[in-house]
Length: 104
Image (cartoon, rainbow, N blue to C red; front, side, top):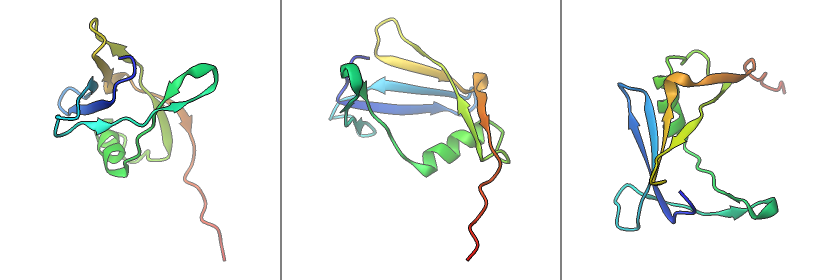
């Protein structure tokens, strides 16, 4: 996708698919991308949304497993304007217990 200025996050709940698509400033649902340069001039961006993550977790049918971390590999389209993530192929990479609350 190169380095788009805007992206859209699209979810197909029945097929359990997450898609990230190049967007534009005119797209109502597009999110502005704030790029950060890492080492070796690699670009990185992050999005934070408890609501969005909780919705994705619900699609995984693993709601009682809220402390685990999952990895899903995406496939980029031939035109490089979409990235498709099949949530059915998600794998657990960290199976941690619920953190203990500090006493006192």
